[in-house]
Image (cartoon, rainbow, N blue to C red; front, side, top):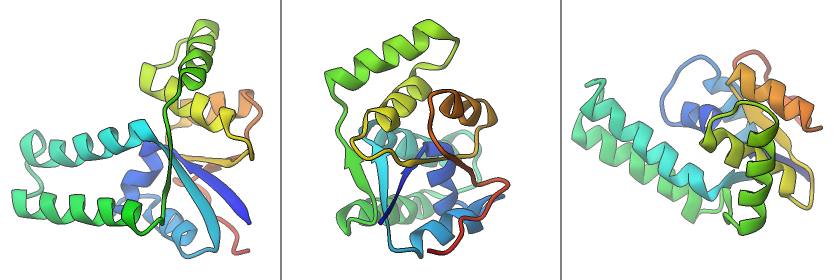
Length: 150
């Protein structure tokens, strides 16, 4: 079975339609293992809340629905959460010591690299896609690519 690691920039497109949403939805329609970092839980919820409080494009009621949909994906095991461990933190420190990368992106990348079965790194952030490639990961750019049906 194929394994995919979804960065927040890609996963968020499942809950807010935008460029790349069709590619993310195609991943969810496949028989595949889909992983996220534990830090993604906070990132997605924070970004959903930003739509209410900062961007003012979502109502509090819509936020509640989006949050419930995201948490249901976790509960229904549509996404498997990879625990944040000291090994991942150490790997993120190594990555951040080699080149400039935001702390959250370093954790995302370190999580994917640390997995026993190397996943396809799914992302919409061009810099992070490049860094993932440099780390030896196969990548899927949801803003440009639609995953092939397996």
